[in-house]
Length: 253
Image 1: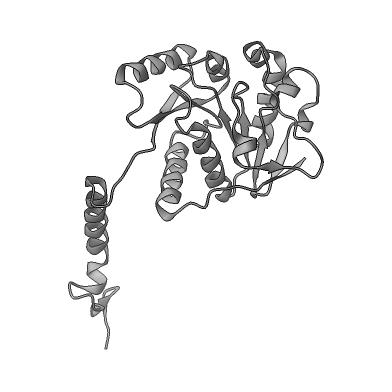
Image 2: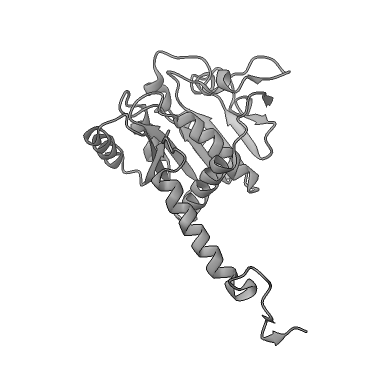
């Protein structure tokens, strides 16, 4: 099925660089990291937005990406991005896991090159049981074979146990934490729950950080990059900014 995502955020330079940096950091976790689940402590910490924008960043890098919306209790992807299809209603993960449709009927190609999505489908009263059945295992096997990277949007681990079922089937997990929302102890408890699943914790994304103009972070990075690039270009342009006389060891006349 072909799906149009009519509402995609136009990222500014800072946000684009943040997601490119996240993409790069994940690539350095090892070439055995293919399926990653994203969870949070509570609802509304920005987990789904992180998954979508990271998926776009990886797809733009030329890799085939599949996003699986496994939050069968409170999915937001269809409504938030105004996903529509000329082929009719969009069916999703809950339909497949309950045996109503075949796997290929859940896969949605999007208007973002290299990016496919399996939406959550209709809300179900028994998501834990569905995620633990053989259909989910078959989905994981198919995704590993046909995609370079698979990102799973899982429910908040601090609210429900669903992520503990999903995580052991993944190569790694990322915890999304909203700044100044959860206590340090609560985040540590969620981290311990992830560790119990045996899934490797790849890191934490600190989300919704308010960075004001003139803040410490802005001042630090401006000084860092100014110093780095001035040191890099100095042999070529000198202190005055004019082109130096010596390039490649030969004098210019």
